[in-house]
Length: 158
Image (cartoon, rainbow, N blue to C red):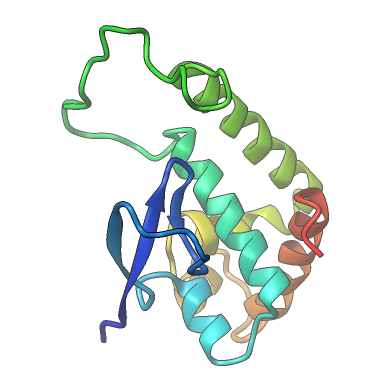
């Protein structure tokens, strides 16, 4: 099932809420892709928990921590790149995202970070994550919510 919406594309990624500023570039996002979106849409996660999970996933993706099996075809910048984005180069933004990700996972703790990584970053559904971790059925949702609450505190999401 696909639920496509159009979001404004910013340096940080797709913007969730449409502001008063005119749209410059946009991207179509499938909200049904993320297990967090599925849980949030059905009322199992609060807005704060959902935002924390999305921030964690965004840092995971910005840090380029996902396995890569093909050659990178990213454009090479002659001007050194990234001068407009808060004064950081692409490498510095990647290092900062990795530091935020590591801090958030440490805040979640060793018992909670397993399911948090599987669902928020790897995109596994709760049943698959519970099975892989050899947990009882329906226990993952409670543990995930606890982990997301801790991560929301790390990211200072109110």
